[in-house]
Length: 229
Image (cartoon, rainbow, N blue to C red; front, side, top):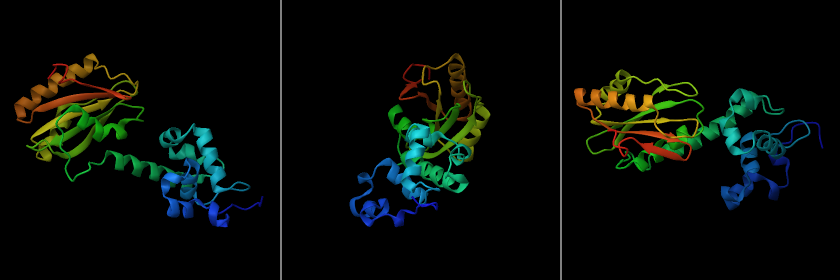
């Protein structure tokens, strides 16, 4: 093989991932080929596809690449900061698309609706993230805001920050959501106490707390369904 980086366009046309994608659609390509399109070039003595395969192997698949930092990706031989940033940007766009409401304003009527909106954003977080969904009078989502980010095992959220968001954006009601990186969605004593404080504050300011949902891996718990709201 040559000593210079191999460019995808140097491959035979029938083997070029970009042309195959255009002809047959993205579903026809392997993960390594899709990543190779992002990378465009490989490194010395390896093609873009070989570099993509190396990434998948080193990080244990797509999930590992998605959760790796730009700095960590850039340390792989042949990557560098530019390629690492391209890959992270692609995964971030995919995550945002998955979390984006299908309509201009999504309507939530049950816990499953809420989870479908935020699960992708929280799925790979290694720290607790506390989010608040701001709703209008028809339970349509006005905004999803990150109120706070905690440690590996604990989140710190204060009703002041939660309801400041709600008041600033004219919310009629709110739904609180946070993740448990451990994968266990069972609400802790602190979760139940915070829920009680949010409920009481909401009654005072006239912006009721509709629910507080804890997400852990593929499971979730609604504190409203548990009778705690």
